Amino acid sequence: MTSPLVIRPRAESVEGQPILRPLPSAKCRSVGPFVFFDHMLQTAYAPGHGMDIRQHPHIGLSTLTYLFEGELLHKDSLGSYQRVRPGEVSWMTAGAAIAHVERTPAELLETGSRMHGLQVWLASPKSAEQGAGHYSHHTADSLPVNEALGVKIRMIAGNGFCLESPVPVLSPTLYAEVRMQAATTLCVPTEHQQRAVYVLAGDVRLNDELLEPTTLVVLPEGEEASLYAESESHLVVFGGAPLDGPRRMNWNFVASEPALIDKARERWAAGDWPVVEGETGRIELP
Image (cartoon, rainbow, N blue to C red; front, side, top):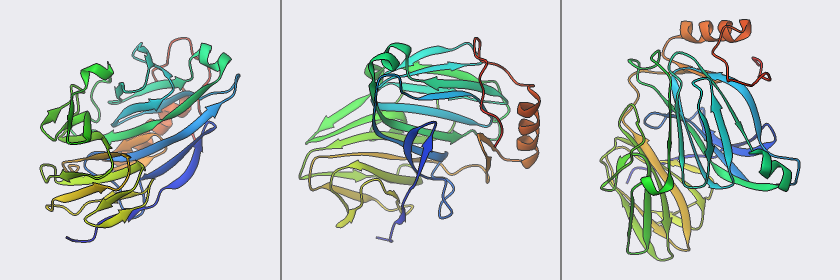
């Protein structure tokens, strides 16, 4: 097997929430449609503290939030108002212009809470990057699951492993949560051209090479990969079809043309942007 590409994430903080961010990196700008990958690390918030990501804009992408622990409140300029719990999918397609807010619900802010999860961005195809915005929420029991021989696979978005998620992805996508008992094996097939593995916890070998937890491993194209769990392990497998051309990323904006990003920056700075009802605070351009 060709040696996989290993990406060690950089540690950052988003409004006080510690994260690890392996994508984008200088080594790899995208895996399938995935252009951004944030691992929100396990965090215990004391009473009076929590996440509060104020109103901010997006173009040319879909955000997907998936929690393992904790809760978030999602609000956007389409009028969506949704509480997101562990195992659920919060899916927002930005189109030409959208704004949203993500925060710890008020009652959890009072009592204290915990947070652990993932947020990824998927670049929209060129045909949809300036289209209409969209939001959908998908309950945990709506996501298909396959459990056999000590391996449990939940299809978060897209399709793979004979499963298909109801999340309305815009291009061929693979995004699966995998839990493996000790001494179990998972074959990652080549049904999607680009694939990567991110180990959240546990001791996992890829074709006999031990994977370092919280490291992104991009699998060689066209080659099946075998994962073996030496201990109880938790990971995600993701990817899909290559993007239909390079993407530029600037702050919260993703686009195929620099002019689209320039226009979005100018509009946000000028206040010419859809607003989230009831919100006055906003994050200004960096």
